[in-house]
Length: 554
Image (cartoon, rainbow, N blue to C red; front, top):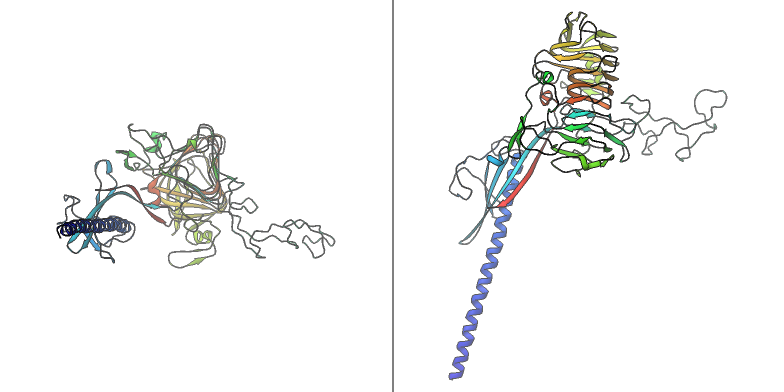
């Protein structure tokens, strides 16, 4: 009996120990599960805060200004009444603190999320902090220093040029009508025009079946946007979308701008970068179709450097090039916050080239066969060619647009002036046209600029001018045109040519560009919100992104 009693005591001790271990394991498992659920709910809170900053917040705002109101409370202080609280469908809850960052996080948003899980009398909380940057970017064509459309001969930009600001090149190719439904554009196939020599292919005449489809293909209609007499397809990986050679540079600041031009512009925007306040243009390079070749000493962005007077941001905010990099430098001379491997980020259908030949419906629902017809109907129409010069007085007035120039080269412009022919801005009797007001000159042909064109006060917040050409714009292409200084919004459906050294502030938009002798182009961010009347593609296109820069558990 004594041995049996001892055995029972030993068995009982082992049983109690085993039961204790099992209970401890169950408790640990329960706590681990609750901790995992609490962390998931805290992360869900961060995602909810991001959705509020991107879309509609609890206070109804949609511009990312929503913040919670407890600047002095600690992140683990549960007794505040100013947290945003929400219960998930699975029973977990989270509380949010969203506030503006300070010190090294200045210009950023700090999100603190406390996830809570309750199971009976057990309560588990975990706290997550995320540092995010919200960007609301207007990606319309005018929020760039250069915007290129369909391209030509494998190029969107050809030449040695300094571009400071954002660059957006599509290279989409020209649209066409697929008459035979074979999925590709059919150019006219060669044939032998037999008697009666009627200048067209007749059944029975010999032809070259270039695509092997068993029949002769007539030319399918297409929109010759760039005016080179042939249909240009989308640029491919072997095409050059942007050739940057020699001393060319894409920059994020106004370094190199002359004092005279800078005095005519609003102050450059500032922001926080690497813990210091810097001047920056928020420059991005986007190329939808085509390779970017970088050669010689050319650079896309510059290496980051601290300090300076004034302090500027050297690196680009981002590069998005789907077909990659070429040239003898390739991506080795590209300096961007997001590296060099990101593809084009806007997809199809968000941004397109605003061709003047396309049908257009205005804000009042009135439809026009083309944008040129819209401009004609909303302008003072003048028979061309129109020759303007600082030394020659000129005046035209109408209810929809007016233009006057005195003998000293002072120009007053208002509304839209539509010229049926070419426009020449000549260097006769003076070197500078000084404009005031807000107006746009439209040419059904081409525009040739041979003199300085500058605002009386500040471009584009006070004085602004737009130049639209159905064909092309030639800047500084004549003898004696070097060192021109221009400030305006320039649009040419076919192409823009610059052959001399010049400084251009504003935005240039065209199917493609031909640049020589290192012209310097500078984006003016204020132009997007202060466009001259009638500029094509002026409606804003907002894209909101939230970048999570750091995440940690407190």
